[in-house]
Length: 461
Image (cartoon, rainbow, N blue to C red; front, side, top):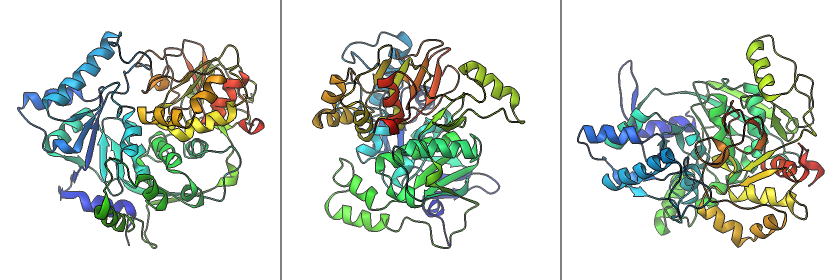
């Protein structure tokens, strides 16, 4: 009796090294501009070509500005990295979607929406949030730069097989509770290291009822629990999402693919190394209060007292954020709101944000960055006329990119300012030196954007 992870993993094993790692075949490699330059340099120094260039897709996302993308990048470091990726892709004969290309965007948004990430695949990228693609029913994980070079050269990677964990969330989510809240809740329960060494399969009523966008958000955040990755067994939701997409199988090949994909599930009696079960009714809209994604509370709750373990780091985090144990964060003034990132930059996230701000107006004193995850999302926003809803409420839509998820481009939150962000990490200085980040769902972000303070979105729905 096998788990789904076993089934996909075993199908991709090339050879097993005795008392060593497994040589695993990789179906898809994604490259962005930050973690690939040294890998390409290594290939060049060894006189190597890419073994299967048709399996590799490149696009800049971390360093791209979210305005004036038709003009040269002003920051010299960002410009050099983006230019280098284009040069490397051209030299090695790889597909490249540059800035302003209609197919460009955040790599973890573009892969699924183009049908490049498919059930049963092994997918890697030099980026920890590669776990996002697991939502398609794939084994997807982040790798280091030396491993990127390994895959460029051989389309294989050496990996130790992780342990398996199944997390089931049963019941029905309450009003205003999203996949982001589920993920933030799991992180608070498991802590940021609770899934270290495991690959997580998400299951249960809640996961089955999530949209594809919701599953992508949930899998994106697996890494924040310390997991190697996370995934969801493919089902009708997956097939409906993929059908007709550019790189998905077509015609007879589609029917054959779906026939195989239907077999991709854990056997009824499959044994996991660890099983956890949670209840949907225990989850309300959530926010973080500290400097790691596991330091989170329900939006109506108070910051808990310092635990006996790690008291020093806990107090340091609260001091950095300017908060205290016992404090409620409802009503706390907000300076910045960020909607976007590979966590929440999809069309469903913009629909959610628009549902709250419709008929209202952006609060004075709040700077809001609304950044689609791709040009495809941008087009859909305009087709659905969400841009008109957002603009009439005082918001502007920026151009696609990683934006304020991390301080590698122009969208930096100034020191001391408090941001409510739909991104995935709230480390010290992650959104800019000295910036303070509260992670939240698009609904919580929208509520903060129109009230100017942390607000329970259920009051505005």
